[in-house]
Image (tube, rainbow, N blue to C red):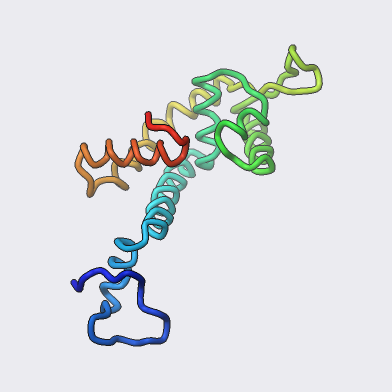
Length: 167
């Protein structure tokens, strides 16, 4: 492998002395560009987890919604959207699908009669239990090349990037 370059070769330059070969380009690109590496790693992790969630008839977003409702209790769609950082229109579609399947129910919020609180149902809890046996395992496969210490450091750094604070 050649030494890392400050920037990837420009399109159309072809192979010249000191430039990476096509087989080396991507490895050098992700080593030199953390934005590309983060996007590609995220895409791989999401696709793997989405595939696992799909075997249970839900999306990864729906799985995460069920997790929050099961752990934190009923919440408004807006609170779910804000907390889980899911676009509001996507949240509406997710809740509609979960409700249609019997995994959640909407109840009027006693504190604000204009609002609805979303509650997980027993069926939703059962589905979540099944999905929890598989979906989290996808992370083990995704992070298989890393040691336990590297996984812990990656988790700490990602939490810091996403929340602005370290766990």
